[in-house]
Length: 141
Image (cartoon, rainbow, N blue to C red; front, side, top):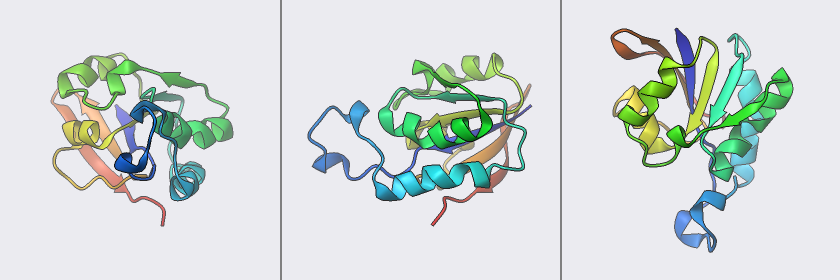
């Protein structure tokens, strides 16, 4: 079953944000990355979008959801700090064509210690052997 793992777009610098980190929004570059996501994933049969509740994650997939006419579903299983053991039960309940938007540490839990720049995506195959990387979709410039 193929799913897409998206790392949220750029959201400024954590130390320069005065509010609660969950509320930190995308910056201008992150907004451009989010706007480019529908084009980057255009060849994939996306039917469902799940995201971390952090504002920057929700904002990263909103243009994709609007383009596809799909609802954005928020789930705590994709929050920053979630372990592979937290995400795998979620993957077991999803179907092919699902997008998961999350944070760098969670991306590493799913795709290994590969570089996962903000705004990038990974197409992965979820099966009996776990998660296998199929292809990387670079972050838009």
